[in-house]
Image (cartoon, rainbow, N blue to C red; front, side, top):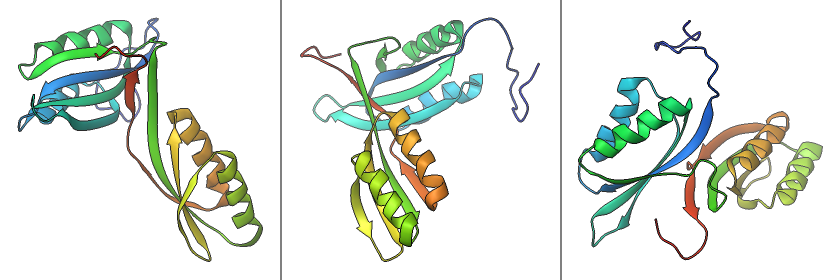
Length: 180
């Protein structure tokens, strides 16, 4: 059965859907990101979050951090296919990794006056937001934390006048002195 609004055949089955974060270490060259994203697109896999940056200028390597979800079989296939791409040096799956730390940054614009303004400020303080811009009738907050923390704050701001959200995507790294 196809999922409503989806152009892809998505099988409903007994396999649980797992959400995971993949770190893909690649050679930093033109077209690499397009090839990695194309692999997901061509096979009907969704990318929930995508963050890319050069991590070692001298070694010409970049790190692509991808949050995706699927059945265990789908995720095995994604990892295997990513590993076969020529510019990919390594694929690390952080699923179930208790040593992993993930963070995301969001800029959140809220418009309101009076009691709404006071409540937005109170909640922002409780979430340890930084005020990046303030006017008489609007604020722009900066919030860093887990994706769930950002989602929770955004949902609380909706009835208080949320007008815009910009998110960076997830960045993940393992704790300790070991490098991946």
